[in-house]
Image (tube, rainbow, N blue to C red; front, side, top):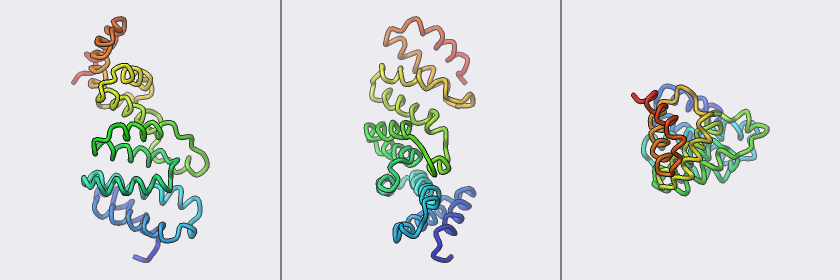
Length: 202
């Protein structure tokens, strides 16, 4: 394969779709490597879409393979180049979660949710659900893990309307809302959360 960033990106994408994770990782690494050799060679569109999403694919692949130290290093490099890319922020948050750095993960998810997109960033956004609900839900999940019940309860109730109907963990979410409504003495909300839990439990 020639020293061509777009060719490697195409190959990486094909490997990813076919679940050839190791081959996808290698090809995404090539894209990043070629870009970093001479960033000035590439226009805004290639930078904002091709290169940014090679970083996303690379981090996701490394996470899948549990190569967490490498994933963290790549995430830091990606954020240095693309500080306003919510997909990269989200992946960096997932890396921190896997490493047990919950405060750092929470910070990345908050930034992913709050990033204002414009220009090529809008074209490049590959996963709209990150800003719609996933990042904020993970912030609430972390608050729950850290036993900040008030923040978790408020976070979950804010994000609930944006979560799609086919979300497969409704029962966990409603079980947590029942538990927290009780411990926070929001007794008026207990019946609705209890009924929702009963409706969604497996």
